[in-house]
Length: 374
View (cartoon, rainbow, N blue to C red):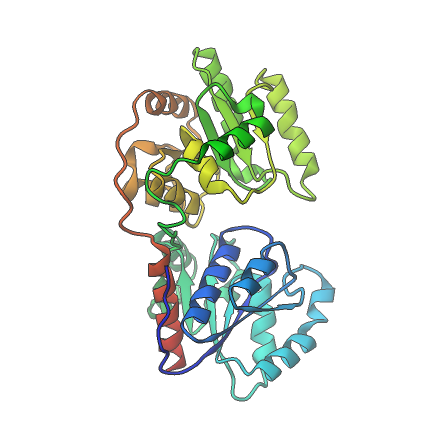
């Protein structure tokens, strides 16, 4: 799916983000970079690097390695280098997608002439205060959901709401085709790698190795379903990460304590998320704090796979619109078990996705850049 068009004016856009390992904000960087290149603009990303850099560069964007996101005094020492890079690049727009990179970008722009336009995207429900307020200094403030818009308005009462733009994340229907099923070769390889996941409905909870993602609730769900005589399997997808080893051990202790060690698997992030979701009887979204959006909700529903999640934040917003049957009151484990059993028995039909498409997000981003650049 392409957004290629002849631009009225060629823009240079620099996106600032801490790193490019994984995550929704990071994927948005790649997707907007791809759209910029397809439309004939210059796309540059500044970050500490990561496994997504190869794809970014293959799609035509440039990457400059500079750690602008580590919370350290050393990061402040890189301010001069960032200013020199921006002076050399002469960007039309600097787009910051995280708080410390936003502070770095804001200060680096001081003294530059002509001064590039400054845009921010609020990807999360950050703790309100002076540190987070940098995200509201953009000429335009992009938010990824109505949930985020309501949140920042409620905490920053003097905010000029006319600068806010809602640009939801989007998925590519060609990458997540309706009704997709992985081929036999993939299935064989997957179950050879994880034989304990075969033989029962698969529940998948995608999310990084942090307890905010609700991994404990997912493990308890499988254990409670087992007590009711409902056999399931659980894949905690993306939970194994460098620096998160203690958390993985904590989860494994809970798994053993609940007697479901033959039903639960922990993995690192994978590139075959589409096939994993397509094989899942349920995709879970159990974050114990409201999230800004909930991209995996859209990905799973695009594939025609049921989603079960806590009805708060962006996840609740999406489920209310796209799949009300999957909503459960936050933290209500008893209702969670009941609803999971219901959906595993008979899940309501899922219609093909009509909103939250990648091309919609890309068009909105490019239109915003062109609006700001005049």
